[in-house]
Image (cartoon, rainbow, N blue to C red):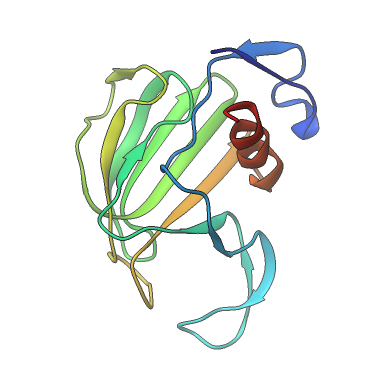
Length: 149
């Protein structure tokens, strides 16, 4: 399935790509932007979205190459995938099932959601970074969901 994505500050301008949701369901539990951090209980800027998930298969949203994966004290077990100038980031995994340098097709299971890193409960942290700048992934995720209906 192809979906034409236009906008997102030029991230997908005139690009047609096969895209899939990172989870089978899409329930946002914490949005992008300013918030009170649930663990630190002080002002914070959330550079992605948190999606409800508990031991769920996590899939790459587009084809790309694993640029990094491992453990980060904040993100926990994570995977970063390069899609050219765009990078997708998946955090708080129970474990990852991919290795740096590996090429992945859209929809490939890359790990299982979990509660690693700085969290209050199991979920998937999903972020998009375009040329080093974090973007609000909500429009991207809902465009995918709407194309699948």
